[in-house]
Length: 445
Image 1 (cartoon, rainbow, N blue to C red):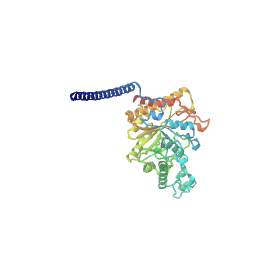
Image 2: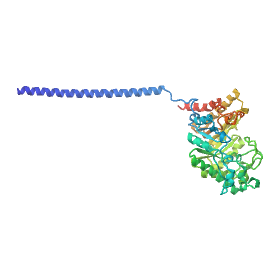
Image 3: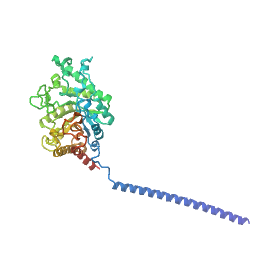
Image 4: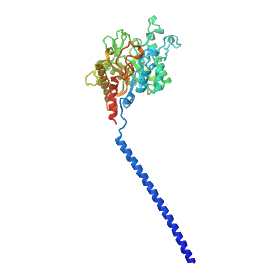
């Protein structure tokens, strides 16, 4: 009986052990199956992702892409804020403000930051320290707009022989006295003005202004209108003869009259003194592609560079649909101009780009020629830029306005030179403007 009991117990134990072993094996097998299944899923997922990646194209740049994004690998793209007073400032117009916000990441004030607008005559004549007093009501709205919308601004312009009130240059600011202030006094006034303007922008709108046109259009090669400086370049002089094609009224260069040729260097020295380190200082001029003028600009800028006072040159192609040559190896072409200035090793910015159709004509053939010119220019800039392996450090390109027939100047105002029409609709030249950027961006993918 005891033997039977022992056998039974042994059998029971064996069954239990076998059961436990079977369960363990089954659980392990199930776990392995689960792991294999998960691995299969992961592999399949990876294969599917790879397959989808191979089939699905990367996001392409199209005509619907904002201009600022099309050219983001090359340079900032801007459109100037036109206007002759606060009420006609482009950003007061909903359509133009929308265009600027959506398509551009840089701008400049074509008028409203010039000395004529910022200097307060009444307050200056009452100032306790005898220095000029500035007001900023004409530029603050644009600076605030830029700050709120992530748009950078080129400061335009600090020192210019035009659009600077004559009273600034007279003793006690009294034009009727007929007595001009001496050089020492004018240097103090210049420094005070530059300091006020630069520090106002930096303190109230930090990071908005990224470049300043410190001196504008001081090089002159027109017969009877210049003096040859100690450095050998031709400076616009104190003569009433002024062949500046952009302005009908002849004006003398009071800066030279009162301070002599040193005013240019002093202006850059003062700007360097007050501008933050990352803010770039530019000389800005027109007809920069014409051989004799280019030679003189090169000399002046080279001398300023040697003293660490300048960061770049602003190039103003304010020209027509036939002249000058753009992408050409001929002397006087814009390609030659870019490559020549690139030898200075400074930044280049296209500051006042437009191709004008005379009389505001909207003939389809002329509109197409205008579009072709914008396309040729932008293709040239992309090719010459260091991003494409070219010699030019192009950091900004600005069309000098937004809309033709400027909507805020009334129905009688006619012009045809910008990228949008009076109704804020893109013209053929807008598509010419962005085409080279689209091609370049998509060829990188």
